[in-house]
Structure formats: structure tokens, C-alpha cells
Length: 75
Image (tube, rainbow, N blue to C red; front, top):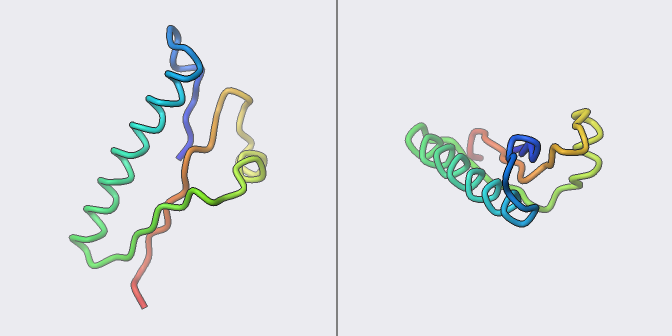
């Protein structure tokens, strides 16, 4: 998940981080619920190399990697 802090026009940097984290939590929970309903394995990953991922994705300086989430078939 990537947050674009430029979209927050009137918020402080801590508020941008807070709202981005809250929104990411809501979205990832919906993915977990869908995965459970379809028998899929879902995992949120926070221990990722965010700078390297941002570089690979070609993100702008105001775009921040928040989390990654894997979805697949259980073993």
C-alpha cells in the first residue's frame, strides 16, 4: 500500500502518517475478510525494504510505502 501525502493539503506530517496508516488498516482488513471468505491465505507485511520498494515502483518523494500484503493459496 502506498500513501500519497500530497493529497493531504491541510494536515501536518504526523497527521498524514496517522490517516494513511488508518486507511491502510481498513483496506488490508477488507482484503483479509475477502480472503477468509474465499479460502485464501492473507498476510500483512510491515518488515519490508520500503526505500528499495519505493525505488522499484518509481514513487515520488511525497509517496510513501506503508505496508505490503500477500494473498495466495494456503499450503
